[in-house]
Length: 589
Image 1 (tube, one colour):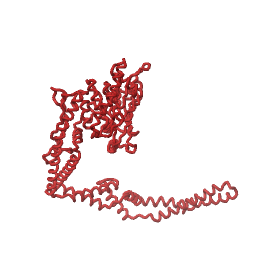
Image 2 (cartoon, rainbow, N blue to C red):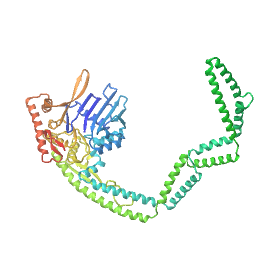
Image 3 (cartoon, helix red, strand yellow):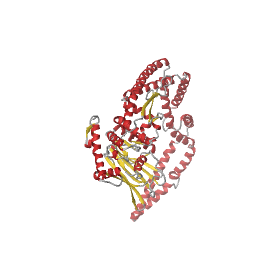
Image 4 (cartoon, rainbow, N blue to C red):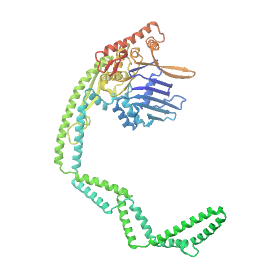
């Protein structure tokens, strides 16, 4: 459910914090007060509406935030998969925030983590269904109507069986197609892979070897220069008359003697002594280096030959050596896969035939059940529509063969069955039946959605339903029917409804009013929760206009009392959801 909606600097709303109830929330107010702006703000938050030009005049930044409470663990996992944001650890609480900037750009975050607009729209599909806006309603998408039909008919277990059979057949067909490829081509590939693997194996590469070979080749190629120059340095340091070490030792001895006369020279004496020792160690290291430094033409030839071998392999299969070794591992997997492949096509075809027969059996059974469920669903929706003032409306579910197929099989098979489902409605006599998504009237569309939602409520996974224009061209008598249905629907979902009818508003668990207030030269829209006497006054004003009388107050109180008694009377025989709670509401067990 949507627990709280916060709107800041959006159009004429400077700042509004709206707390919502778990059941039916009705928004009322005069025409032009900004009721639709509240729904518009929710659509902006969910990525269902562009925020362009909605920023409040003079503001640098606007914001819409919503706090959602989600109890369904599977739904939380889907949101995590869509956004890569961990939400299960937050106790099922989601904070969605969308910021709008004067530059025209916007940003979105989920529980403080930035997400993309695409991610936001995926999340929105799981949270809120806005009725009255054609392009963003879950039930209007033909791709989702099949799911709705299967949920209503409890066909999902059979559909899962079908899907498993479909996947097995598709995989078998893929393997059959692979094995049906040219044997010569497979053998050529295998021969090439084996040759490449043998070439790499023969080279006997090891990590770091190339760098070591380069270093050794550099030494062997420049051995004469190394001997000459290193020997000259060693002689100057140690062997020559008046060598550096000889003169340094003499100077260190003099300073050491002087340090006995003046303690201030002790540091200098120590430094000279340490320098002498260090240079002496360098001279000894150079002597040992020169003793080992010999030119071996045979070794140089071996190193160069090994370098050429390594370079040839690396140039063919990847530099550095690690890349070639990784390619060798991949070759091993490819060789193993090709060696495992069998040319027994007849045997594989023998496996495909039973899978195709099983798929056909399950697909036909699923189609037959869908046809039966479709015939059952149509009259139920028509009965609901008649109660909602659409007595002449017709509703049907079209179940036609799908256009998909499995290669080589004469079956209209798709991953979800053999069927394409479309909800079709005829809203008025004389009009042609047409798909639900093409219905133009917002009021008619909202009432059809309400009828569907009332029937499908128990199995629907959307937690928040928003109804806009649901009372378009509806009178007071029908308003009570719609209000009762919305209240009944709120036993399964949280409902948000904009209405001009007091008959509908009287059924609300939370009644909110939207009003414009002028302060100085600025106009602001405020949203307030109406309770007690204030709610009675609001309903009375909706009944009689600005002039409230004892009669309109009495009528308002009668509406409130009637809403409670009528809802209790209608829900008492059913009781499938839970026990009756306060004011006749059903409480989940």
